[in-house]
Image (cartoon, rainbow, N blue to C red):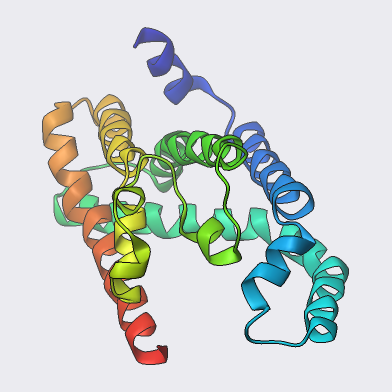
Amino acid sequence: MRYFTYIIKQADKCLVFILFSSVLIVNALILNKVIISDTIYFNTYSDLLEPGRISELINNRSKYEWIGYLLIPALLLVKLFFITLSIEIGLILKEYKLSVKQIFHVVLMAESVFIIGQMIRIITLFLFDLNTLVDIYNYYPLSILNLVNTGSIDTWLIYPLKLANVFTITYFFVLAYGLSLVLKSRPVRMLYFSISTYGLCLLIWIMLIMFLNVYFS
């Protein structure tokens, strides 16, 4: 715990951000180049498209997937920004005094939970026989979604069940602990604060995704 406290307080934000972005890019490369094979594409679209059209999709993916790799750091930064913003608003309402720089640092350190989760996801994908893109997308280690038959539930339930996993829960505890260090407050109080700020924003995001899934299904 003392070592973890040192990391939260002393780690260089730029280096950590570069490290996290690099891990996510490597994960994406492994996913696209190794795990998602041409066979996966044919299994996914064989009932919907002609073989020639599927081959065209595969070729287009190879041409333009580099754009996705470039977007990874930007998307990570946007995610961290919005979480920082939600916590900053909560701190203002609670009349806590903490700089945006300090909040961002804590949020960045807490993101390590999801980075570890993504690494475990990539590793465990090699252990399962997932035959379609849908199966790969729906899989997330230690989530409630893995305990149910996705074919027997409505599609709008898939995202929240996927997000209900051990890493999401752990994230709240790590975020609360980091805030308790910089604010010199009790971790339990900060856990409640994290749930009422970031947790509320996360709930709104989940409801939006669920609505879009229902609307476009």
